Amino acid sequence: MAQESMTVHLKVWRQSGPEDEGEFRTYTQEDVNPDMSFLELLDVINEDLIKSGEDPIEFDSDCREGICGTCGCVVNGQAHGPERGTTVCQLHMRVFRHGETIVVEPWRADGFPVIKDLVVDRTALDRIIAAGGYVSVKTGPKPDANSLKIPKPRADAAFDAAACIGCGACVAACPNASASLFTGAKISHLAMLPQGKAESTRRAKRMVEQMDEEGFGACSNIGECEAACPKEISIDVIARMRREYLKSMFTSH
Image (cartoon, rainbow, N blue to C red; front, top):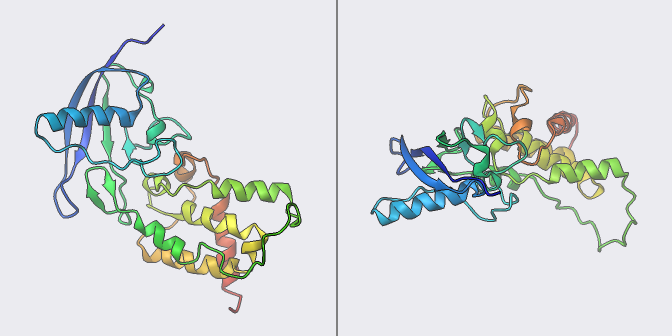
């Protein structure tokens, strides 16, 4: 039996540009299909805004499959919304109540300046990657399958860390606006594999220093980042990042 349509009120942050003052504006949408995704709802509202001659709500969107990380915004005070392990594009209206007021705002962090409405500049994460999130040593030709003996628990842990989509939810959820979960994940998935081990300490030093330079806060192990991460990456990667960074203090490059 199909669910009945809903009426929702969206209180959306509108900001014309980085230097402009922003404000919340409320939009009411009727006949909302509960199976509609949250971004589809924004699309419908934008169609009505365009028809009435108003500027549409700006938001980032690409894959709509929870793998690109561009759709990030804060929904009712939670990064990516109320469902755990879910991106905004995977969030469906059935998790909200008929007549509910939903508050939508961009990531809030000095490292993520607002460009317009719900769109923020996340190139700081790209610069952290550019500082060392790669393998530059010569690893030789492509090896035969299973020629590199990697214990399965280590391979699984590396794969879990590599699942990071760089959405920035960890920064938005952290009271300190720390990017430690993101940086730790990018350091960990390479440090645990043979190809990335040779540069592990240098990588950690460069990426942590770049993270600090970008203005992100320090990690105080609150754990909000892990709870908000749509890929549910463990804060174990932060501990590994700290170990690799500490090693770099005693290693000559």
